[in-house]
Every structure is written in structure tokens, then in C-alpha cells.
Image (cartoon, rainbow, N blue to C red; front, side, top):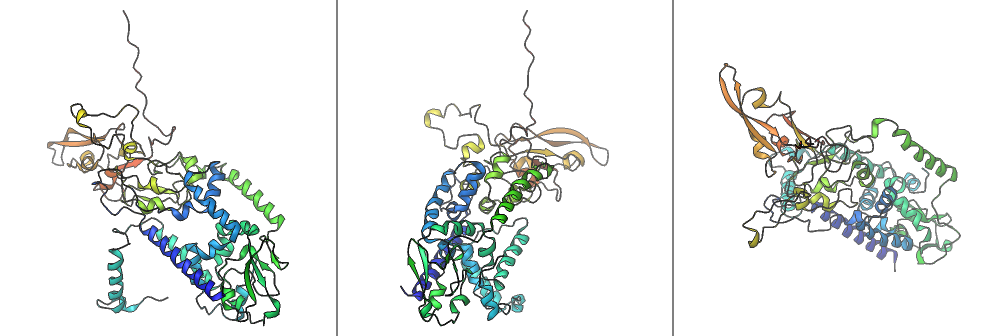
Length: 520
């Protein structure tokens, strides 16, 4: 097969998988009404497909938890594929690699001629459109049209916003901009999955054959190489660095390069990544010693922050941090935009893990989407019945006479408990009627109840005001009360992680031990 044909096949594969990734990302949501759903809502697409088939996710989760989550078994075929074709996943499938490949192909003034040749060798180591501001500017008309079409097809029905979104976006733009200096810098120097596939490529059956007699030293293969694997004849081909992008074959005018299936590599092939033994041992020792050293202080302890509220179904904090890979699927799928990346709430280990921010959004009782999309089991898959502690199906005709009541074991999943700041609560501090929190409380029976109280208004006259209280046995910590509280800034009612079901130590309700009855 000719090199240009292979290059076109690779480009087609990249486009198909990238569009599939964008489609699944756009569908990582529930576009309907969660409250009106009559049964457990489900995500209709396998939105975690790329993460569940990631060998690095499977490997790191297995190492940290000593188990293999059932969804991650899909990564096994990709491990076998890496053994056969090396880093072909990086060049043909990976959406992140496709993005870097595209940006790395741009012409850059800082990467031309000899500089570009040098940047593609192995190493160790746009202005805003002014017309958009006009009411009828051409760019504005075009973008509004695109937004209308995409909004009616794949884009989110509601624009979410997340904490640290600007910072995360700047990091992505910075990594993409590095391609203008060094082609696919992320894939070659940083990407941990690429490093794992590079190690597995040691047994790859795909071998590059260099025909030195046909080479006229035009260096076009090196000019368009995306992996920095030195395909030029006369140099050692670095097998672990090759992404199988096939650019070298397509650009060689003399046919001096070819790929073939072979069990043995040529003498001019370096099969394993270039790792210095001393550097590897030093990094392992440093990594093994750094974590215990950091854990001697309170910086990594997450239990100290009362506002570290995890999604419903989350494992206890230790096991949660072992499994969470900060993929953000739970944040993307949350219909109320309630989940956000943590910054300092969970310590150093908890950076960018999901945390509930009730002031922005609350946890919908009938929603279990975050538990469905989690690829590693950090959020265990639960049902609405388990979450709410009550059956979701309508009773049968034989049960209509006696209303069904949840059993003693059917307790709802609690992610926290609401508390009142009486100095800011209108009925408590200002003798002003306000029952917004009680109206928004979604539990049944309501966890917030009102007690009439005689208070004095500013004129000294006595009036009756209903003051809110929280029943900790019914509160699940969903955050609806805090979300709806009319006091802006710091609300009068707030949710903390106290009483969360996932923790055996973060509890505050004491058992009511009655003294034994006297016998005469």
C-alpha cells in the first residue's frame, strides 16, 4: 500500500475518532427534565468509552486499589493492540493526539527550515475579530448561525460553568502552543499513556525498513515526522517514539521507507525507550519517598474541610482518591451544574476531584447520572431508590390499601447536612418572614420544618414569625436550601459534609440510649 494512501487512512481514522469523542462529550448530559422522569434516568450513550478503554487508567487504578474495575476490562484489547502495532493508538485514535497533530502541522515562524528539522529530531528532554462587536458584523452573523445549528443538535441545552475553568483552558492552550515550537510536545515528553504504549511497543510486530540505497537525503521524512523518531536513513529508528502517522512514507519521493510485519527488528532500530538506569532508580526512590513525607503533615488530609461534599455514591475519601482520575465526566453530566473541581478543599491529593458547590447548584434527588458515567468506580453506581431511601415504582393494586414504608435499612444516601446561621437568617435575625428553604427542600417528609415564634419587630411590636429548623435524620445534604437562600454571598443556610453516609467517622448524631426501665 502506498504511503499517501496510508496517510489518508490515518487522517480519516483521526477525524472519525475525534468526532466520536466530541459527540460523546456533548452527550455527557441529560437534556430533559430530571424531576419529571418517571423512572431512573440513564445516559443513552457510552460516554465513558475513551476512558474505560484507556490502558493507563486501568493500570493506575489497579495499582492504587489492587483491584480491576469491571468497566476497565475494555482496556485489555488496547493493551494487546499496543503489543501488535506499538503507539498506533497515539497516531490513529487518540483525540488529544489528533488535536496536537493538527496544531503541530501549522506553519510557525519559530519552527521553519533547519529549526523545524531540529525540532522533529529526538531530544531528551490569533487576534479577535473586530467586526464581532458590530451589531451586524459578518463574524457575529456567522457565529450566531453556527450556534443556532449546534445548539439544536449536539451542544448543551444549558451552558454550564465551572470553577478554575479559565485556568484549565489556559493550560490546554499553552500545551497546544508548545507544538509551534516542538511538534507534539505533549505526546513526546509529557503524556503518561504515550509513555506506557511506548514501553509496550517493545514487542510490536510493525517494523520500519530503511532502504539507504534509495535515499537522496532530501530529509522530507524528517521534516514531517510527528513523533521525533528519526525515520531518516542513516539514523537509529526509535520504535517507542513512533506514532505510525505514516507521514514519512507519504512524503518520501524515492520510496526509501516502508513498514512491514516482522518479529525481529532491524539493526538500526532502538526497540525500547531510552531510559538511564540511574535516572529511573532515582525517580522511583523520589516518588516512593515523597508521598509519605507529604503525608506527615495535614496538607493531604481532606476530612478537616467541612465543605468537601462529594457526589452521592462516592467511596470513603481514601478509596475515592485512589480511584478518581479527575476526568470531569461527573461534573459535565450533572444537570444542575452542582459539581466542580476542588482546589484546596481536599488537600493536595484532592486537587480537581469533584466537589458539590450548593451555592451554584444542588444535587437533584432523582438523578444518579454521576454514578453512571464514572469510569473507575470512584462514584459507585447507585439507583434512585438507593439514593432516596424509598421505592420508585408505584405500588401494586394489592398494596394500595396500606401505604408502603421504607424498611429500617433503606436509609437515603447522605452527602452532608444543612445548618443555619441564625445571625443571617431573616426569620431569626430580622423578624422577617421567609420560608424559601422549606419550600425548596425536596425530601419527603421535609427535612426543614417551621416553628412559629413570637418576636419583636423594629417598632417593638410583637409578631409571629415561622423560624426554620433542620431535622438531621431527614436531611441528605442535597444543598437545595442553600442554593435557593435569598441571602446572597454567604447564605443563611449552608451544607457541610457532616453526617455523610460514606464516612464512619464524620458523624454527629448520637444514639438515643434510654435508661432501662425499673422493675418493681
